[in-house]
Length: 378
Ligand code: HEM
Image (cartoon, rainbow, N blue to C red; front, top):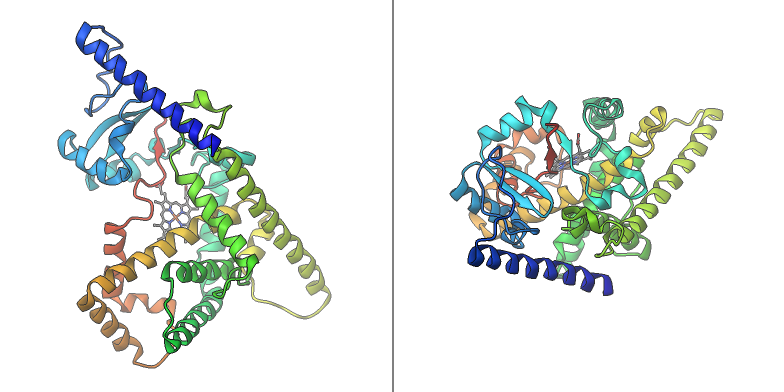
């Protein structure tokens, strides 16, 4: 609480100094630095804080509005960071596809640097680095390859069956459900089964399950919440919002947890060698094969929140639009009948309306509206 107050104090002091500076400049004609002409146009920055205040509490909407004035490529000054914002599909293609070699680096948020996570993680390593290439290859061949996904599909279907049973039981009792928590649990289990062949959460909350959910929520929150240190690195030593300290705790717990799973698996693999019992290989097996310890964590944290948020929004929009819900239901019944068959992942191609619902959900409620910001090499 003290740290939060300190952060607010720091920001307010900046705002105050900026306003005084601005008034002095306009009333007394004091000249400060000239803005560079190399950058695209953008709103006039206040001294020190730049355009931070223009972002408001829904930055993606504020940016869309600003781009109507300044065009599809504009410059904002966010504290010490000069940021170029792209807001058209054509420019996005230029940056993310055509010139991706020079535009795919990252500005690393302070919280991500805890325990040197950024030095091992695919999301933060420069794509020119050999480690990033190895990790990318491992993902393509060992995590997301059709064979690997096929071999773990049965585990995700089990998760879906548990969700359906739970929903049925609750609806028969006429109980109210918190969809957000339920989908989070489902996706967490779906990912944890794909990776480790176990359920990490339960619908009827146990302490352990809640603790794990808190870690994943916590990591998501700390890595996406604005942090004053990212805009003013000079405050790095202070960690005024306490974000780095909280992130350290969450990350330590997650690492200890994954370490524990790895140790257990190494022991059971050793035992399996001595017996004839064979399991189907999950992602943890594949990762242990290549000994890339750190990355099951990033995939894990990256995959749970984004997917469960998408489902919550898709369901909310369908409930708000009953005729679209009916159309989606009809399409599912057409493909699967009215029984309780478990969906095959390969059948998604037979569900164009459902796919359109998901894409529209991403358009209306993108889980990562600003992507993970990119940094240019030059
Ligand atoms: C609705 C679901 C998802 C959304 C909306 C989403 C969104 C994103 C976005 C916007 C980025 C940044 C891309 C960029 O900077 O150009 C990203 C990167 C990433 N995502 Fe996801 N994601 C989703 C699901 C997943 C899942 C299921 C996994 C893994 C199991 C995952 C793992 C990753 C990883 C590892 C990266 C970093 C890639 C790199 O830097 O090379 N994501 N995601």
